[in-house]
Length: 116
Image 1 (tube, one colour):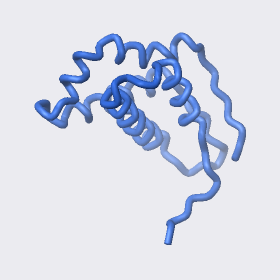
Image 2 (cartoon, rainbow, N blue to C red):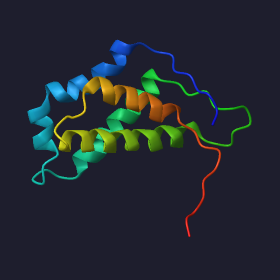
Image 3 (cartoon, rainbow, N blue to C red):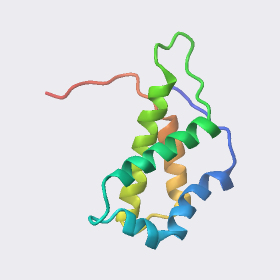
């Protein structure tokens, strides 16, 4: 696995999860069965817009990947992770989740196999 690097500040990373934790009651209601599924999509779309505005990927030269799809793929994945974190009662801590997001954003694999 290739070594990746992250350039950013710890405080900015943690703010993302602290915001959800601080507004726990609101997000529990928005994610309840009584609310339209559209909220989940809207959350992913908002994360996608945040990524485009505030972050930049450096893809290897010659990579045949449209960055638009990378942003969409990762933003929906993070939205799913945030939703699960909220459903699990905001545990583990926002700081831990911020660290996990950074690790997920930097993780690459050289091999992808279909299991038999």
